[in-house]
Length: 562
Ligand SMILES: CC(=O)/C=C/C=C(C)/C=C/C1=C(C)CCCC1(C)C
Ligand SMILES: CC(/C=C/C=O)=C\C=C\C=O
Ligand SMILES: [Fe+2]
Image (cartoon, rainbow, N blue to C red; front, side, top):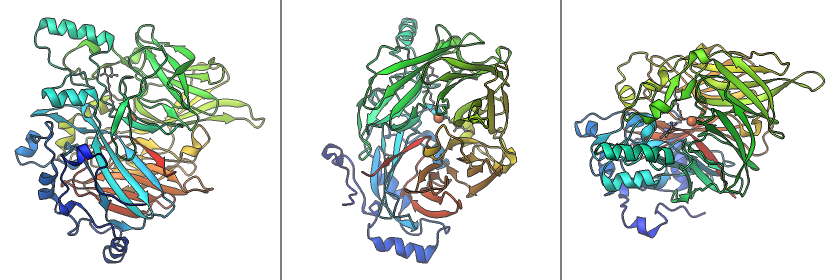
């Protein structure tokens, strides 16, 4: 394969300059020199790149990056994790320290909100940022990396008008006058004012299309996994309607399962889209059992035969949706008196086979679920695991950029755990929720979880997530959870913020943890590196320094090399 450091689109090539200092030699010998000379864990960046000067050189003349965010202008360099990306795109080969396994062939793509300002206006919340895609292409032990801004309508309009033009997670466009506000309310109901800033996840469908996603349905955007170019809207050809959906569909080679909350008649529609299709078909519907609106469904789990529909006490709030200024819980409200529920729907028939009340819970992310069986093979219960924030909504507030950027050494990250639900199939009205292991195993921080995808919906032993090395204000370790031993192995490097660990299985692997775990790590002084851990030992096997700061990102996917 030819390794190119040049962007593939001629129109963009002309607008980007690649200073010599950014274009790293792609000779295989680089690999060896670093292996021998520096070792895996020595600080990277030894004379490989000139960081600050190159950053300036690299900034393209995009409207959004014409002005640096005020904090940088004032001379405070935030942690890279919470600092807007400084250029629209870059691509180049990184020098690898250590050994990337030769079997690792393909591209890891990561999405996330990487630009948190427009002009000189700074956004408030982590989830508001415009989507930044990062790619790590692994082949023959080498690593071509890059990033590119997603050209959503929301991002393009913001660049053009130098202001926020669509409703983001917490940001609302300023109404110029009362009439404009009334017009804006009307457009809220039509969905026209909602963002399409697909900054949450990226999935590879069974037919090979790669789609960026967020919580608004219109924020489903197809990209080219090689160039990261925005190709256009993924439009759903059905008439299911609604404006929002779960940001995390369940995607396999065969299908795409999604949850559509119904805010009018509180409940959820479970739908399935077959490989190659744009049409979602309804599997079934669940009516809410409590509260005036459905619970927030950022994600949901499935087993081999069932879809699990969570009804979290943190519910969408019509009142808060209409507010121009963010409320403490943004578009949501906490309804502890309406209880929490878990529903189980049969995938084949759409029938609800269990619906139980469970202890109150707060989660963004389910990890996995599976069917518990008796000795005759009959399903006795569903086990569903999630990153559970001890039924405490404070985490939403902690993810405000001000809080993330003003870390002063205090231990302010609220406790979280691996919450394990058991939803019995014996008709009993209650399910249980308990910690799957002692939360101290992972520093009582827990989020951004993945598993070996071959174990989706099946009994599994391992999960990978971000935990905490305290004191901290954000999850700062990569942790491997062993559910059998109820133990965790933790990777930690002082001052860094690693993003969601992503597991890639070794072809032909028998063991569940035979593979690698990939993460992109943001450093405190304007650096970032790609990190590869051995899935089994959890030891670092390779890292490669980016020539500039990569901000924190959320979720990723794997695009195997054909
Ligand atoms: C980045 C992330 O994890 C979550 C992003 C959530 C977003 C963009 C939510 C957007 C919404 C609106 C703009 C209005 C309707 C409600 C809601 C889905 C929360
Ligand atoms: C980053 C995060 C929570 C961290 C807390 O410990 C949640 C992200 C949610 C959206 O994907
Ligand atoms: Fe998420």
